[in-house]
Image (cartoon, rainbow, N blue to C red; front, side):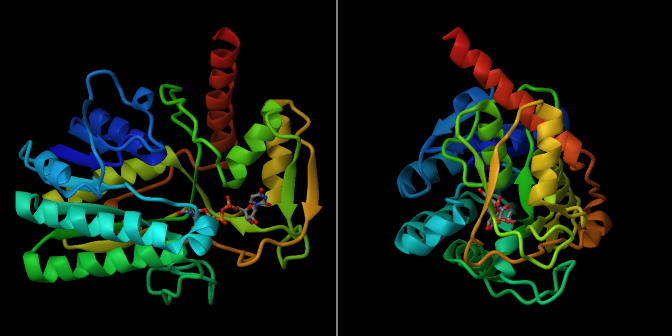
Length: 330
Ligand code: WQD
């Protein structure tokens, strides 16, 4: 397949491009490089510089090839920021996605895989969270993802657009082969924050609350390796290409790791001190978020291979160390 990867230079997108290539497909990347990095793409990857808010360049890019499908990963993703700057999230995530949908339909691209999030569920009524769990986002970011899922359903009905929705739980890790090492700037998630502390780039890790009802009192999450996420995008497009029905699936492992467990194991793997301190809970954080991952296994034949805690930490540490060498060598 020839696949249009919108947002393909980003953290998840660059891993998706690699997975497509390894599966024998061709990726053409469209990205505005606001957070994405050209260096994360394999040499020879066709690159279209553009923005989903620029309708004319988007339409031209959509029509530049006969694409078999599109994977949409171009979005802002800081849940906290979405609560203070919702207009920014409306513009980039909602308007941008509508622009993309229009361009895709106009260019006759028949299949659409969408990067969604567990944030659509909000506070869990029960865990593990299956796809039938009510969707009541707690942050505006999650709302934007849910709105786009709704658009996809309608474009499916009205325009025949085949679509698959992937609801990621906590994405983490880096390419196990060490080819993708460009880091996210100003990361807001736990694992990169822990790595920055290990590198000495930040003084310590703040643990947001240790009085939750979990085995050690700290927040428990379902971390899923980005290479496993990437594989699911390939399987999703292949399913649609093979005539499979539209679908929504969770991508998680169903296994939980607490904040303290992650920090402890990071200390062992990096050999660094990683100072930490317990501070107040972060508003809106649930105690436990866990996926029920059965549907992705059933529909896509997907299975997490790299999402155990040690592989998550080791691959991320390797990427951070590659950056230390870059800094030292520059
Ligand atoms: C993980 C755990 C924190 C930072 C977010 C979004 C979600 C999705 C994934 C995009 C929690 C704790 C964190 C820190 C800490 N985003 N923590 N100190 O909140 O589970 O999910 O990212 O799709 O929509 O909400 O991820 O990495 O921020 O936090 O103690 O400095 O680590 O309280 O228990 P979260 P996270």
